Image (cartoon, rainbow, N blue to C red):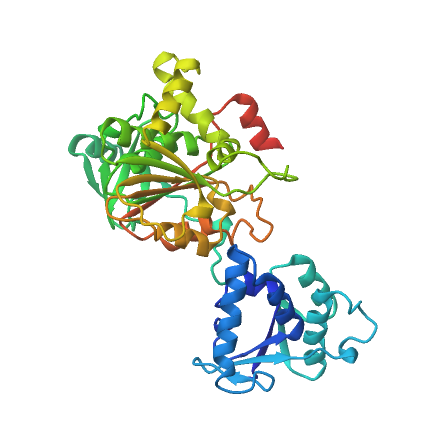
Length: 437
């Protein structure tokens, strides 16, 4: 079989610093323009900068084994090759003053030399231009989940009336011929009467357990749907160390997570503190510099969290968000029972005995989510919430973001659970917006 030549765009390396080792025994081609673009990013104090530096260090190690200009063999039988662009690479077909075009031109030259070339880029427009030149193109598939086929954490199963009754009576049910994921929820529907149903949680490959009535509510908040009840079961269960919640706006992801977090820290004292964080990525144009201390800056970014906390604090008063609720939140913050933190400062921390909620996790890369989860110490519970269809990070999509990737990779782990929430419960107007806009 002929060797494949994978020409990598810069954004692939910025997305995953190990990308040059992900193409087995084929040749990875890095045009000089890619190296120049990495040099521009290497000083950044963010994920892109870290990945740029990681790639440069990897290439420097390979340089010690031979000439990158001629191609250096890798441990998996492949080759990494840095090549110079040439003026005649693409003639006058595209403007070579544009960096992306110079990278594509290199792929086009190799194609004309008779090599099997595949241009790999996370930039859709770059892939379109390369495809127009007859070059085979593809997205970078590693660390990517198929969002359309993403594990939901719930399934429906038609059974006999006797089996539904058995789940209620014995609190357990053995389901022959089925294979469940750990902590998957199953809605059992009576074949003769679809109003006769039961919900079980998988505790073994083919065994269901009835939901725990202790987890029926949290902080005076009661679930409004089967999916919310399943989410609350996972959020309240101390045996589940990582919970991921996906859903559109208004499905109750953040509210449920905060309610469970408050119940487990303020009432039962199972955890010492409730820590809430979210990526600092604006919707639309950034308003720029914010004056004040870190806490004063964070207050604006954390306003959605304050809104939910205020609602939960006021539930005992009919859901009224009055001055007493605001004072209660300020007191909890002052006593350090609730901490609002920027993800910027989470690297290097070891977080023990805390209930940690990462909101808007769809704006994180797989590597960033890995970094966050690996901060968990003894007795800590992690909750990731977000909507992969509302991504503000320009380098991610519904399939490549860290939240979707985490759901897919951890779905078979007993310490992990996931629920996809589909029905908006915020208001009728919010439900209409989610469905029709």
